[in-house]
Image (cartoon, rainbow, N blue to C red):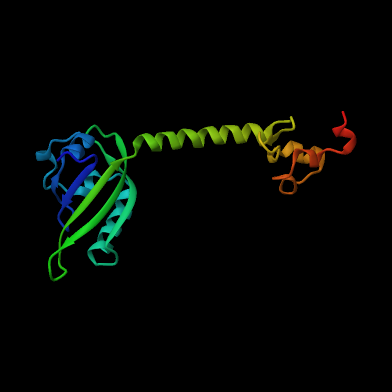
Length: 178
């Protein structure tokens, strides 16, 4: 009940049988509201299709557990990103009894990852469309990490040929003495 993540027990036909307090709070439901509803109703599209396929494979015994990132739908219709680890509990004869799922809220991580991707796209767009020549150089060893297209076009150095070289290798002896 006091687990640091969500724990869910569902039948092999994916109806919710039990859930801990953390999961109920994460999804905005009382436990009574969750019991006996189809779990897939809480999984956002298109994650529901992949999750359902993996559940069927798990029940067939193709693997003992699986891990998947997916989105669940909060009671207020907001999407919550979770890392889910799912396993099946079987009886002594190997017949599946129920499914156990452990869930970790990764929403904040996903928001940060998205912001980073947006920032990288903006930087790359600026860096590669600028008419100014740019080199990115490592602070400690003065190695070229990257250059933009303009630098490559004006100097004639192909990007692949100068990456990881010393900054001093792209300047002539005359340039270095200045």
